[in-house]
Image (cartoon, each protein chain N blue to C red):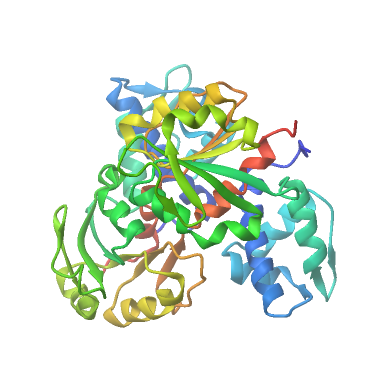
Length: 207
Length: 207
């Protein structure tokens, strides 16, 4: 389900709020103010209130937001409810780190398949998955896997993206600093760790 | 230098614009419209124009933004001009991927030091750096390194952050999904790759 009037910038923050709410829930809290949530998610309270206003107001003055209710609503908006399977392409250092990453579970994601073109890696079991030959990418959709993570070297990224599109994958998380081109029906989200490092000096006064 | 009226959300996008401008520059372009830049940075043109309006207007109607001039200005705002050295803590899969990452250069970053607590890794040379014992973190500031990247397992992240703060580091890029606590004078930017994956299903219509 799409809530077409929610800005992309708000959508970007919803998973961060969801993670903050999960932490507060583990601490045993039932409700939280936008001020307190702000501490957890590193966004100003007014922005949090504005973001939540796009999909209804869950806050009660003086009490705050009901954590269970708000989490459920965010999951519904993000379409996380059914749980999702994802595939990884590229089992190098970065890919191996992705496979070991503990943070996907709270969003209902499981990495169910991993692919590489290196014979030395194919067949190896890493965590719950066995590395498969990259030529098997075309089996993804029939296995119910509509999303993939690209963690291959820069120069191979476009070719892998093309194979994923041909295989019928609908969403790609791209770790390569290279921009990949896909048809409009496929959504790509790119992560460039350098852009986050590049913001740090702004906040550090020169001595 | 801080431009205090620029919102954090704009600052977050500036490195992405800078990367887009660098790509356009490599293509031999001298100027770019907000519409064309929008394609490269995956942000709507109105948002780009609004972001640039915070620090002056570089656009000429019908011609667009001068790429060299705009890039220079963004670098100045982000305090990237002098170039920056960074350290890496944790040379596991993720840390090794960070060391090999080609995307830092366009922002003037060099990773000049790497630390681990594993004797099997200490002394090994990876790319340009030799892995040092984690107890040497206290030498960072006298080596002119004020920023560090944390790529250690979740349960070690806070302890490493504490050592970095004690060492005098001013900025931390945290890859652990764990929230780390630091004094206010230290800036932490956290990267959680799961939050990006968690946005994908929103954009993928259920079949």
